[in-house]
Amino acid sequence: MRSTLMLALAAAAIGFAATAAHAKTCKDAISAQARSAAQVSDESRERRAKDKAIANWGKRARDTYGWQYRFWTKAEEQKVECGGTAKAKHCSVSAKPCSLF
Image (cartoon, rainbow, N blue to C red; front, top):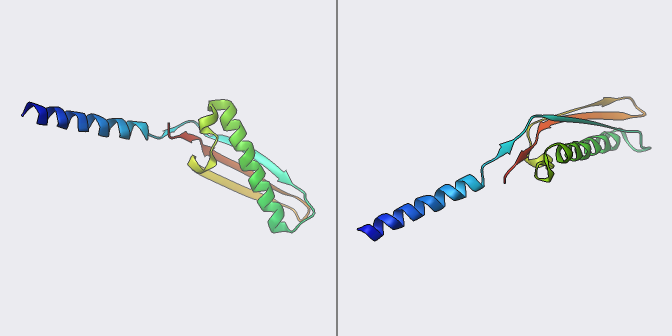
């Protein structure tokens, strides 16, 4: 009986530790911008501006909260707004950086 109780407590502790280890921690939102005036199609110019803005966001998140918060794919409340003219596109991104550690 005692060994069954100890086994049950050990299993519960392992389950709790596994859940706590995968807890997602998010910080305050960070914003970043970028612009592209490359001599390519409008679609490509906008994609480049978006990619550069997300890269800038990752750098700002890393510098503000630490390397584990630099991943756009783990962020919450992602917002991307792009616009511009026929010669240049610009994008602004914003999201709450999150860490799984």
